[in-house]
Amino acid sequence: MTSILPSTQAQFEITPAHRAEMELAARYACEGPRYTSYPTAPQFRQDFPLDQYLAWQQRDGDHKRAPLSLYLHLPFCKDICYYCACNKVVTRQKGVARQYLDRLHKEIEQQSQLVGKQRPITQMHWGGGTPTYLDDAEITELMHMLASHFRLLDREYREYSIEIDPRTVEAATIALLKGVGFNRISLGVQDFDPVVQRSVNRIQPYEMVADLVANIRSHHFRSLSFDLIYGLPHQSHHTMAETLRKVNSLRPDRIACYNYAHLPQRFSSQRAIDRLTLPAPEEKLLMQQMISHTLQDAGYLHIGMDHYVLPDDELALALAEGRLQRNFQGYSLHMADDLLGLGVSSISQIGDFYLQNERDVESYYRHIDSGKLPFTRGCMVTSEDKLRRHIIMSLISDLRLDIGDCNRQFGIDFSAKFPEELAALGPMVRDGLLEINEREITVTRRGRPFLRNICMPFDAYLTAHRGDQPPPRFSATI
Image (tube, rainbow, N blue to C red):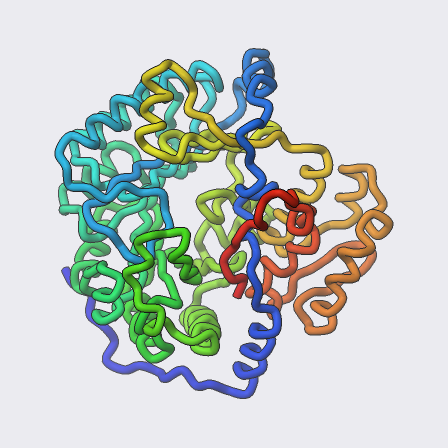
């Protein structure tokens, strides 16, 4: 059943306060990491100490029994979305999913023996690509593979989520997903405007999404998330206002709003986008402000830097209780210290190590077929990394850093250790983005959109890249 849209709509009024926020955003606009990890992915190297990781995993200890999160990357899509920067394979060739599942089964067996089969899987996420590229039988088979090699849970507190392209699923698939154990669904909405959808080759009318939402709700999933993107071709604050009206009418539990980064030199599909149709930087800033104000006026809470949730959502409660974490899937509850990535390009965060699988599908197949683990890049986290990661993840997740706790935990004198970093934060304090005293650093409401900027002074790698390599490129922080 299609949801009924409200017949009236309050117009977004650009006030002097909004203008001031836009001027502030323009002043802090730069490139920077999204801090889904620290060190960030550009620091992963092919000559990382894999032998030390394997030796550590061979030893018995608490790490063999502690809770574990799983991420599965399913890279296939039937159609290309021009904006996409994910690791994907666009194909309609028959049999590709079968070839991939056969290799994934071998990796699942290898990795479960290495990390421990009895660790409770408190969180699991299937991403892509398009996970629902798999048909119903293949979805069932993959879940059975996982249940045969890991300790999947049927407890209510688990978080088992899957990303869905609304164009790829029938009603029966939603019922199947609930039946095999998923309790959270994320829909790639991006934008509801027909012109914007055509310009990025992703046609999914509002009515299609509304019917899918009704179907999902009829199966009582624990939560429903929408992904939105601003900065796409032909978008403006006028078109975004209409998209937000439709989003609000469907009332998802969580909304993630991402800033489109146009990098055609890195992502070939983006070359199909006419750069002259992209909104000007000032228009993007206005859209960002409008998204924030509109969603908060509609009752959503702004958590982290790009997520909005209903007040009774578990992420809102986790933020209040200091149980929010940020990882490669964005914000989630902190239910496990270790994350195991499975499939092509997946990243694992386990113990003191980050490890990334081979990013090319054919190379991934060759690794698996030769009996090798598919790790090709990674890094071992140093004690300095752990300190800076604690600071960055506290600020970006909890919106505060307890300086006394940091001193005790790492045996430092914060002000003596970080005089340059504190000096770099000075202008942000004066602009009202932060409050700093001897006890804590606190991000203000005004500082929420600038979390990446706030974290960047503590990133030791931003100014210390190797001289024989070009500096890494990042997306715009604002």
